[in-house]
Image: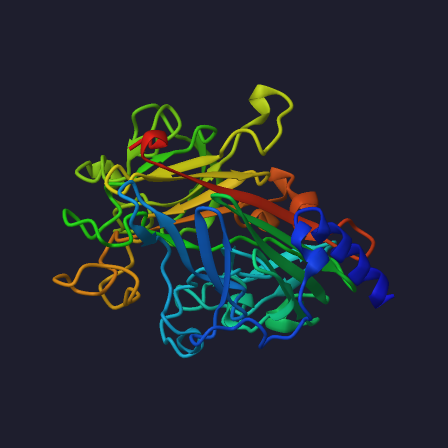
Length: 400
């Protein structure tokens, strides 16, 4: 039975992992560099990954001047991820359920489940709990010069979640692009599954002499005229709110610099009680345009006019969490591949953005949203699948 389950998942992975046909033997030590990382490359892009959390640690793109910039946050050495006391989920895969679960509980088929709380004085569960997936080492099951696949088996009852889940995370580089495919299979019981990539971005590589922040970055969310309403600790309250044209949450009517509305009093409380900035789940409303191919229209575009680097994000997911790093306070270091010599080598407040493709957050506690078939899976069901593509361009393609 297990071999059948694994063959189903592997066959699905093969759709977006053409390099697997010449994969090296699945040995966790083959291909590791001196910092404990696996390096992948393709034309115009190279990236490094680690088994801890199936995390991306470095992503290099040449800027408008031909200078290579490392545009994601992380640590220089793989060993630091497991000992960092703050654990900001740097570049990992939160699981088995990303974002927040209200009251650390949910109901499936009339049965209430209680999962381990880990946020807001233990009033909710964030990113799978205190030992969620991005706190754990995945297994490398295949890797080549441009692709790597990680796997994890999450046992029944871990962090209080029902049933075993087997998951595979595949990252593939192609010219100027990073592709993600996440597949998860519930093997024994019905259980909630929602994954994402929790990558932090600074498209200037912290080298912009004018600012250490990402507030100069321009963001476009062309299908996101609505967002999920939340309470003061960012738990969905059941409402769906309009992002009114020209309001602080309007990134759909046109591209806008992230820092544009920071002087506005309307931004205070937008990301929680006494928080100024963004930590919001925007809905992706593409159905208005009829049938669509998710590969053809980005759900988000982020760009910096200083570096000229732009990333267009494509995904079949129907929500998008945008966090403007208001919680950063100068304690998280930047890497040796980033920054300026005469500036503190830390991530300052608003020094990054997190862009998470995912489904509607905490929908397992809002059955009226009718997202069950997107978030609850059991034996015999089709696997959970997330796909995304991050496509990079420079200078003349910039919207900044």
